[in-house]
Image (cartoon, rainbow, N blue to C red):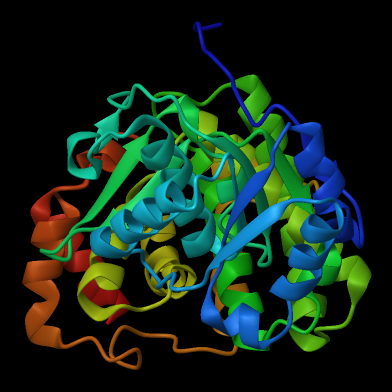
Length: 378
């Protein structure tokens, strides 16, 4: 067995209605002034207020920052960190989807250590310290609550990552009630995103290991078996909880065995067209699975047997995932999502810059391959 390392969030709380306990959990961490990061939509929907009420009932001062944007721009992250400093926060809580969680992670790091964001893009460049951090996901997709990664959109529309164990929160709280009623398209996009995390973690070229494999397999089964129910009925609490746990477990997997070409091809679509991350993954997923079929054949067959039964082949698995994506309620091609065909070479060029992910892919991706994959997805 090759040497490997494994790390994850030190404490995970899975509890229906658990957001009402945030005040107690913040007190457990010794907090007195909380900076809560979310987005305006969740504030309007009334999702944030119960969390704020719990914190204030515990005697904590609370400042709410709700200017988070999708695919967090550098300027928004920097502004949020400055607001946290001005609030003299000692605890940051991220409550929302992946963009809110990624923003909260960086706010805790930047406000706690004073480092410049553009100086810590890359792996293990941040030194900290960071403020105490709790993450509460409201979608079942990114797994950001259990990853040491935050993705930022630079002024040039390039996606860059900060990767450091400092971004693991002190607590990840999974409250499935916060995901009830999530719209079908958002449920589908985030669910497929989580499935991609599991698939790519399981088939990674360099850091695949037995522990991440176990999380990826279990995650994929939960997600595959419950995504249709969650999309069809937003109030199905059991399906919602299984999706939330599956997303978390897939996050644990890919935090230790990183993702590959699906994400590398998805990032330029998000950067240039501001499409939701789950959608961009979904749009290129089937093409990449077919591209990787030969080198990943044994692993695809194992994934197929996990979700389809003991006689499944690698081809069966690819076909089943492609069919699942095809029945999701959102755009199915790059063209339908508003991508311009003349931009495909630019997108391919940008995808090749994401070498930190492409090196993990089962098959090498050259510029011509990236362009061909985009054309197949178009």
